[in-house]
Length: 343
Image (cartoon, rainbow, N blue to C red; front, side, top):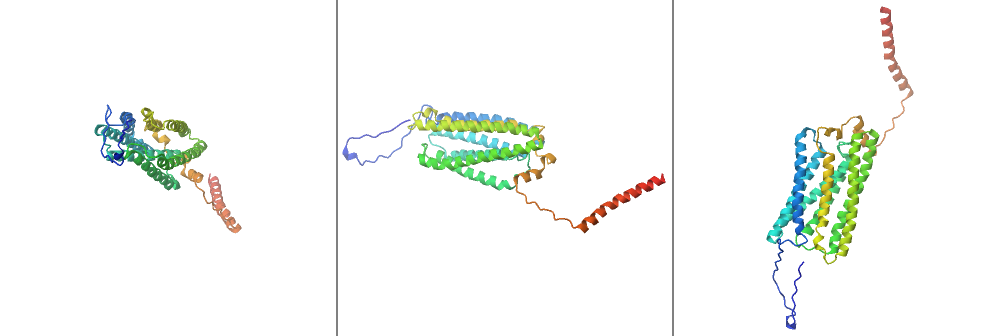
């Protein structure tokens, strides 16, 4: 970290205005010291996403007949992640080479990252609600899920643009809090809805005795619970770190905070890929439409149905109906009697 001071002792120079530009270059390039490790980190993450993409895309190609809609959503998230990590790496590499941050690349990196985070949260919510597993569609929840996703994307995009486009230094704490708070509230809403939906999905799977799907959802829930606990612990550490480092004295370790969130989301993506990887048995995780997976059951569980009480049948109609039902029985009995006589 560098500080530039202009010191003068002549009172006549009190109102002097100095204009100019300073150029700072570290031994490794123009990147600020607290940002330099992120360039190598995003290069590593780009390679990690490529390896994950090779595995996932090869599985999709091998079992393309068995690919489920949910697996197509995972393919989208992996593709967005590959683009985001590559753009961040090129953004930092260009900044390090020229000393000027490329605004266009930065905006694209931020946008791809916001889309990826939004899609990941929406997909996890859809999985928790049993989409493609115990229900063919989201039904009346579709518009609510889309609305929540669009709101989260707008809040996340605004925060990331203001943090990364323009000055490298952070803006004021109050302004940051004003932008971080909506994202945090929406994240909390996602978490509550996800676990509430998981509880309902668990009950349906246990009631219908779908043991294979129940085992997958149990592993998925455990992974989510671990991720939430780790996130809460890391948030506490992040608050402690920033409260103790008011003057950025520990700038060498500042890059670890954003890197951790990338690693956590990537780890959760690996868990999802391992649980729902395309295979020759992918259809056993899919909604089958059988009696055990009937769409009527989840509609009754998730929506309030208006039951129409049947009106009582008049006595004379009931009598005629019973007589009509007894006629075929009498005819069958007469036919059996005639056959016995013939024999």
